[in-house]
Image (cartoon, rainbow, N blue to C red):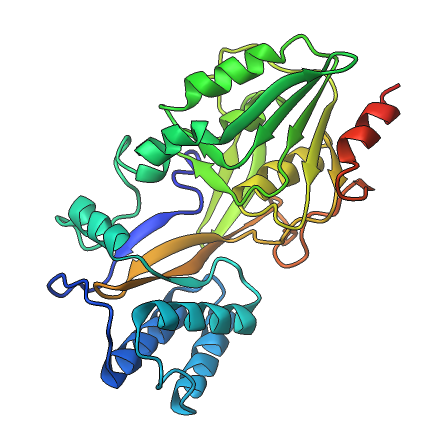
Length: 327
């Protein structure tokens, strides 16, 4: 894609009755909710055969009475999430009971029934107060011994608002002889200004990933052409573990396949798909994988398998391993 906007969070509104935030629910509510989710998975899941299989299995469990005794929305969301993830082995398939989030989605999208992208500056993930509180994922930037740079990213959150933070972090490590980017426990995120972070380490306009959608459309993600900040050309090491997922994996995967970085640690979570949010009612929304990234021209991805490290290292020993091997 030219712009991977909200890489793993794209919002769709499906059907919204009058808002009511009471948490009790009836058996009819359960049936309607599960049936609607099954229908959406069948219709929207990136791979048609998988979507059909997941949908049919979910309806079978409903008919067997799996959810019928649940009487509150949070328990239903939790049970549905466990069920559909077990059926799919896809961490981007989940159900959330977040009435306030749903209310925000309705307010921001009230004049459109289907919105593929938020307008710049509107997505709370990138531009909300919580993003600022988290320092846009830049939880630690420092220089280790022997002039080795270190950046700890708790999430990937690149936007017009966070660019100054990214620039400052990269400027701080600009003169180091090698750089470690620590993506352990990074659950992902995205960028609404293109692939800026990879552009620090690669030439402009390099194709990184190809995204395939349900209808067969393909779009490519490239390094940006507008970045004027100084490139980082020294060795790059990326640390991953089994909680590293989504956009964090996309960055690590791109750097590894471009032979620009060495991956250290443990295999990542294997959550490659892009997901979209579909509001079901006042109480719950469902996340469904709607696009799949691959190496351009291939079907190679990290979905389910995770990114295999170049050097598998015991947890907690990754930085020590990198420093000792740089001697």
